[in-house]
Length: 169
Image (cartoon, rainbow, N blue to C red; front, side, top):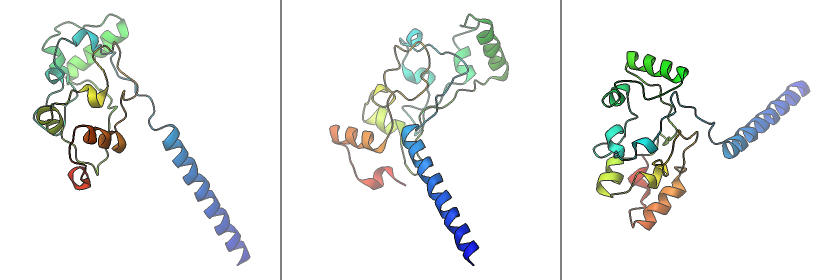
């Protein structure tokens, strides 16, 4: 009986340590750096509106990450120079898919509509995504942290609703 109690004590202690470690890790290291397959240069494309490549921004809940067909509409030849990037471009062109990695995530319990923010509220993309226009390489982390506090601050500044049920499912 005493051995069982000792074992339970160690298990509870181990769970507490694991939980505390996980909590601290999430706070200190919220997201690992993301590496994109191609070093997309937003600065070279800044004369184009975001909606040219990120379809759905003005019409739907979600904006798209560009697929290879979007790139091939303008680039018949690879717009990259080094051999590795050309190989990645060529493989993506054949597959009609670029394996872009998402850097912005919204929790499943939150309802968000790009259309509502971009088309109706007339917010600039940089409001939530940071200034991508002058970037010559993709960011490894979101430039602006998308969090409840940041969203509420913006809603208050814009005199938009802060009713919980508007955003939370």
